[in-house]
Image 1 (cartoon, rainbow, N blue to C red):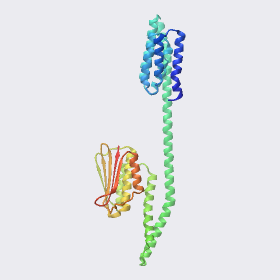
Image 2 (image 1 turned 180 degrees about the vertical axis):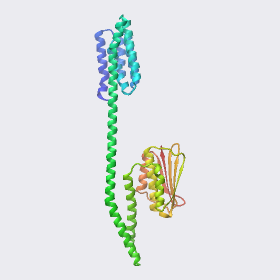
Image 3 (image 1 turned 60 degrees about the vertical axis):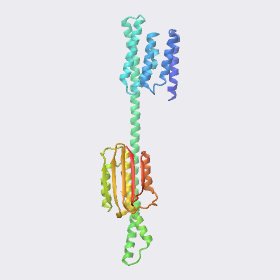
Image 4 (image 1 turned 30 degrees about the vertical axis):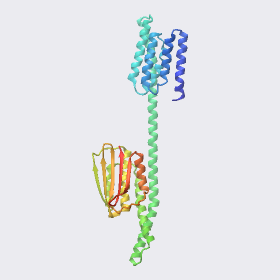
Length: 352
C-alpha cells in the first residue's frame, strides 16, 4: 500500500472529527460512527465494494442520528470513486442515491420545508457526481496504462523476433557455408580414397559424419530461430519430413484433440521433434519410431519409442536436458531411457 493510502484514513478522520467538534453536535455515538467510517476507508483498495457498503451505512447513520452534515460522508465519497474505478458503476449509483435520499430525509426531520430539503439534496448530488466522475477518470487512466504496457510488450516481442531472424540469417550465411564446404571436401576425399582402393582414414570418416550431424543440428536451430510459434497441428508435417529422410515413423493420436495453451503445444512439438532427431542420430534407418499423442482430461501425454540398438549407458545430452527443462517449466513429468527389449523411449506428461 502506498504512503498516500496509509495517510488517507487518519487525515479524513481528523477532518471529520474537527468539523464535528466545531459543530458540537456529534456526541460519543457520532464520533464513534465517524472513526469507524475512517477506519473502514483504510481498506478501500483491497475491498472497494465492501468498504463502500460500510461507509455508506455509517454515513447514513450519522446523517439521520446526529446531523445532516456532508463532511460525514467523505469516506463514502472516496470509496465511491474506488468502486467506479473497478467498473461497478451501478453499485456506486445505488450508494450515492441512498446517501442523497438520507440527506433529504434528515433535513426534513430537522424541520426544513420539502422544497428546501429537495434543493439541498440536489446540491449534495453534485459531490457524488464529481466522485463518480473521478472514478471514471481513474478507470480510463488504468486502461491507458494497461494498453501502454501491452503495447510495450508487443514491441519487445517484435524486436525479439527481428533479432531471431537476424541471427538466423547470420548463422546461415556463415556457419552453413563453412560446414557445407567441410562436408563436401570430406566426401570428395573419401570418394577418391575408395576409388584408388586405399583405406579411408578413420579421422576423415569422423569429419564427414560430424559435419553431417552439425548440418542437421544447425538446420534445426535455424528453424527454431525463424519460427518459434509451433503447434501440434504441425506434427504430421514433422513426421512426413522425417519419413522423407529415410526414417520409419508412425504417428498415432488418441483422445479428442482440442486446442491447448500455446506454451503447452509449443513444448509438445519441440519434445517430439527432439525425440525424432535423436532417433535419426543414434539409430538411423535401423530403427522404426512410434509417436503417440494422447489427449486426456488432465492434459497431454506424449510417447516416442524406437526399436533401434539402444544403449543402457546412454548419457543424457543437450537434447534430453532441453526436454526436461521444457516439461519442468510447465509442471509436467518426463521419463526417458532405454527400453527393456531394445531401443529408446521418451514419455512426457504435460498438464493443460
